[in-house]
Image (tube, rainbow, N blue to C red):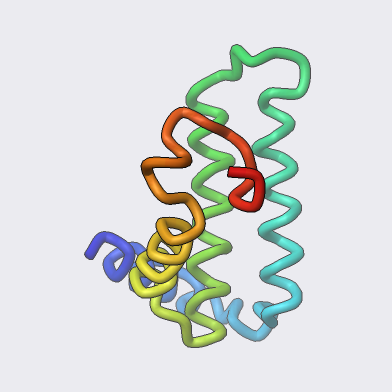
Length: 106
């Protein structure tokens, strides 16, 4: 899938620069949070964020997520599929459609 191609490209980029030595799970998780904050900053004063800036910051978040998944040996497709299945059980269509309540309030 696309995640495998993207993961391989990110992995190659990091290996060429010998950066994996800096990519502990803790450091990658911190980087995800930092980049997510920068993504949120795009919307700090207005919901009319610059789309190109949003895409750049989103790419940073996704790259660090791919690096963390790779570092901990997680398959991204499996993670996503598993989480969607879990959420489908928590949020059955007949009770959750069009509603934003948490699953324990449906």
